[in-house]
Length: 247
Image (cartoon, rainbow, N blue to C red; front, side, top):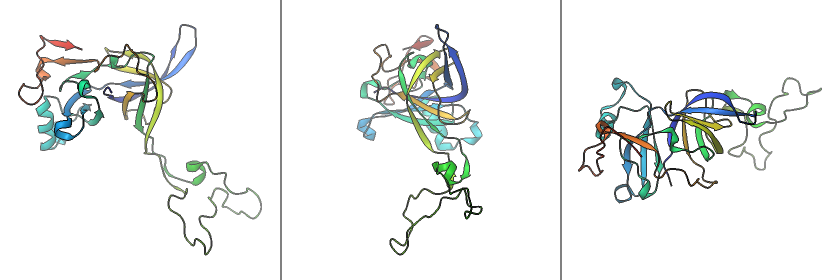
C-alpha cells in the first residue's frame, strides 16, 4: 500500500487526445508536499506517513507545531494528513513527493470537502418532489410535507430528511483516471470533477477498487535535499545525497 499525496485544487480545463476528442480534467497542484513524520507499528501500533503541504506564517504556528516541523527540518505546513502504508513503503522524512508518483492511466481516489450551500430546503438538499402546485397548497409548494405519524409513533425519527445545512461534507470520488502529470510544475490532471472549491485541499491516493499499474514506483516518486534530511540516530535513517536525490 503506497502513500497518497496532499494537493490543491486549481480548477478545471480540458485536454485533447490524439483522436481529436476532448477530455474534461481537474488540475491538482502539489504545493511542496513533504513527509513530516512516521508512524510505526512498534511505537504507534500502525505504519503510516504524515505529509504536510502548503506554507504558513511562523507567527500563526504554535510552539508545539514548530517543534514538530523543526524535528523533520521542514517549513511549517498549512495542511497535514496521514496515509497508511506498508512497512516497506515508508518514505524518508523530509522527502518531497513529486507529480510522477502517479503514472498516466492509473486510477485514483480523491477526497475533498464539498462546497457549502448554506441552509437549503428539502427539494434542493434531498431532491424532494415538493407538494402539488395547485389549489389548496397555498404557499407551501416547496415544503417537505409531514415529518411524523400521529399517536404512533408520536415522534419524528432521527435522521429524517429535512431542510438544513447543505454541503461542507467530506466526500470521496472513486476511480478517477490520471490523464497527465507535470513534474516541473507539480501538476496532476485527473479526468472528471473533484469535490471542493478552487483552492481547496484534496487528498489523492491509489484506487482501492482498481489494480495498481506495474510501472507505478514503489514506495513512491520523491526527491530529498541534503539540507532537509533529518540527522541519524533519531529513529530514522539519514539520507546522504550529493545535492538532490530522486527515487
